[in-house]
Length: 406
Image (tube, rainbow, N blue to C red; front, side, top):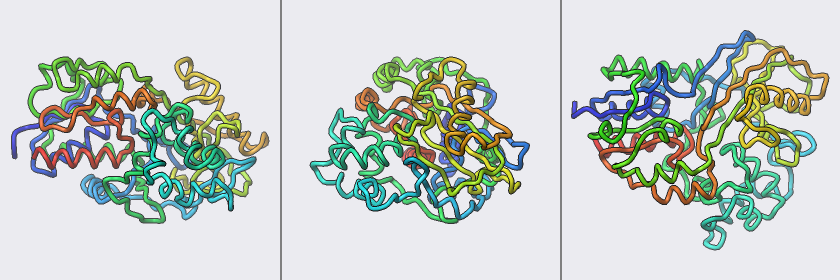
């Protein structure tokens, strides 16, 4: 083993980074400020399935497959309905929605048009302005905006086109792998099982875990260190005297985005749409950005029970800072009845709220990232506040860094 590295943060990013270092033969210790790390938790339901606190799965790549194998966690095979996706236009309509301007966005015209030099996002251009310029307002508002708002939880009028289209236009650093009809891998026992199994496997391999350990500042950041905490914890950490000082100061002025999800468990509604989920354009009148259905994703074993997971981000009409859980629960009930009708019967619910989940991917964050230091071999920072959203993307970045410093 080579000299010991320190990883601060016991959530997915910290565990994945520790695993990557271990794979490259590096001796590593992990420090977690709380007793348990991360927001990826799974709660068992009384109705044959379970609730996820955040992500339900991870994009399947060679590295995520390796992570599953390392943790000895199996994938679940979802229903074939997972391939069916909808967008709300008077009622849920399956994508593609016919020979209309919205179809252009669905079938790839975004990528073909935007890769031309005159169609790439300009610095300081919002998603709505860019989408309207390149695709037209119809395709932009019907498909482009709902899709990106669902991923980044932000209003398209303020989202940075440059940041949110980066993967679309430049491509990923890895190739997603398809299995079971989907590129998303779902742990058999939920994301909480993956987290727990990773922790246990790393401990069995000799990785030392130190819980309830706070970082005090630059003196504790010397040597080979990976900061893998969330946005709020990072902003509470003094980065003075480090190469991240300027970035940290600018990040503190970027609005932090609260996110939430609300599960509604109901008797299986009679409807013509079943599949992965449905996006809600702003003009559709929902509070939620979208809803995920139950094509085997929630692992329910009861045929007469249906799970719905409504996703809330920039909050049309209410503020998450005050009585957030109550407001999200009320909004989800309204959205549920708007989708299925007042006669639809709810039998259970579950709300998760993520405070300061990520920075708002707007124009201010776009400018902030210009001060992000180039990767080094000493102090390094990982997470969704570094311009990378997505567990597979974070894992890829951690792996490449571990390979560099090993």
